[in-house]
Image 1: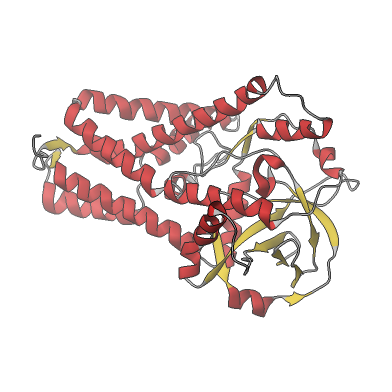
Image 2: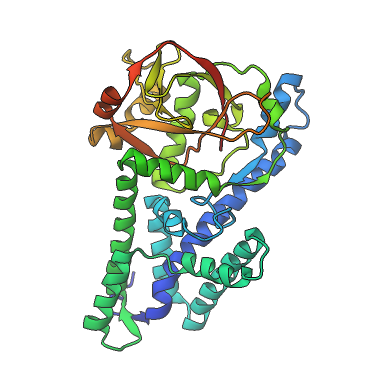
Amino acid sequence: MSPIPWTHQINFASALLLHSCITIILKEAINVLEVSRRLLLPFWNSHISRRSDDRFKYQIGSSVVLDGYTSIFSRDLEGELAELYFTNTGFILLAMSLASSVAMNLLLSSMLLNAVVVATFGMALLASLANGEKEILLPILALRRAGRFIWSDTPFVNFFSLIYIATVLRGQSTLRLQDYITFRSIAVLELVFMKAKLAASRPEKQIRLLRQLIESEWVAVKKTPGIYYLNQPFSMAQRNDMIPFTTAQRLWVMLFKTAVGFHYGCLQGSIGPASCPVPEVGRYVDEPVGGWKIYRLSEDIMLLSDCLVESPPRGRWARITLKTHGILLRQLGKVRVIYLLRTTVADPRTVSVWHSNVNLVTGVTKKWLDESFRSAASGEKCVIAGA
């Protein structure tokens, strides 16, 4: 086997952009596979007899919601979440895209590499035109948004690029393969640390991220009925129903990518919405039967806290779930929480609905929860429904 050509010269311009382009291609390809699976799900299960109460579950399971962390085909009209699109890409997927970019730089010509960059930019531009607001400045705004995805490096990496160009390249248009791998590895590590920093940031910043993420959601495939569907009585949210889904989703976010959401999917995936009590502002409700605590931070923000069961788990999957459930945040001395945002409902006859998104990985200190909230009895019921 021939040794790795570490001193091989590669094109600097395409090298800067190729890693981001391949990451976009891989993420969107996985999205296409998942969307295709959901669209074909009703046909695969057409031979299975369904009860009337299971009809909505199948409709939720075949719906598609894309947010700014998951896809370039989202409602992030200004491209403000472009950096977070890459920050919320898992380490394994980033490593795969880096390895692919190295192989492509070694095997393909500069013309083909530039063609990949141009094609990816064209796809991002079409996505920006398709979901952008129809106005006279749409083409300019779409070009700006597409450029944010293609040139996705953070300020630190951009600063490092300028130093590298000034001190190493000195006007040359190529760089060595080993320098390129070092250069892009720094970018990957920074994205990993930024993800951990966001997960452990202050609650004010996490709430701002939640609002941005929910505003960027695009319901691409909607098969569920309208808001009046949420008026029916749903079962109380149970820890055993939420933890397997949310833990698997968050591990997927940390290792691979964010997940395609479900319309009215809640925190139980395709099972559908669930209900929970709503405490007063500044108070929390402790539900030992449900296995969780819910805190009311403001009129439109609640937190669902991570409450681990002290009894030993039964079964291999239960033990794996317990070990991996919030493992990084526990090392930082924090408690994993799920934010709920109250949605605006115009019709007063509808029930109180709170929205969540499993792609937002967050945690707060237990000390902050204990000092900021007081215990209260169960209040009125609400419905949790989100992506």
